[in-house]
Image (cartoon, rainbow, N blue to C red; front, side, top):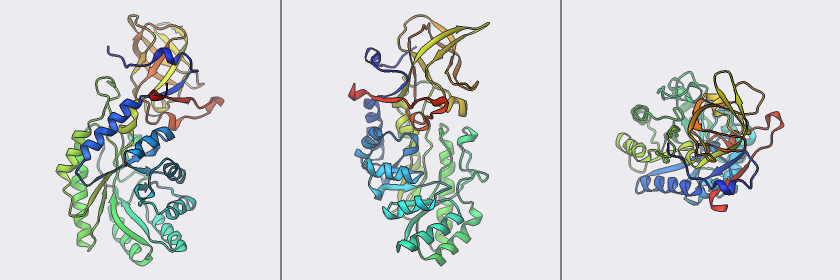
Length: 385
């Protein structure tokens, strides 16, 4: 079994658990995205919710990419880390007045509006500032992303977005309000999508809706198809970079843009997940009746995805070259759901060994909590060790 390459000896100087980021891999990923979108009217907005570490954000911003934010504080973090306001999109079903004002005051690129109620509030707040708010309507295309139901977001019954039936009323509200500048339409069907046919279905729906807006006399300069491209959690060493080539080629093929129309993407997980690992240490090896438990010092407070989504993460013992044996890898949190993997084959392990839980660069650090009064772990970067 191929293992990742880690500076294990250097890790010994640091208290576990901690997040480790392979900056070389992150740069290679960003280079790939830039290469695959070169010469096309494609614009990338990095989804900050995936990982908001300032070091990560500054590097992504240096590539000229924009930001996709889902809170006012994410907007402020993006600005502080070098993302220009002209490349910041603001999404979310529950934007507060404070958060909307932050976007308006900083003249961000676009508000992705998700309901008639939000549009009404945005119109009023924009009027108070004497501005017109740039808006893309987030429409539910009712496309099944074929992913976990917690991260499916484009169906009619989801809390996100506007249903097609509400579009005529939405357009009337925009016409009457005067403070809204409709610049585009926005979609996001889900996350960790590995069946690219879902994106083909999305393209068909986007084209249908674009024609509907044409019939209303409306030209849309912006088409935003969100994100959702999945990564290979099972084989992070064989497939360290997501299939951006096929992803962007699909949209280039099936979603023919009109003159002066731009296509926007809000990628998060696929950009940062592979470069991050959660490094933890074996506290105890516990012999059960029929299995062995590997009890480590990281838990669901440092990486909640396995407990929340039953998500798989590849795990490696980076201290041992002994033969493989199956373990239940569990954390110290006082919850039965605090389990990283069951019957997972690892090199025979002992107290003190270092364990790497892979592909934790997205929704690891950014979802960390202080439950059980635990401290938020440190972050280490390969180019600073």
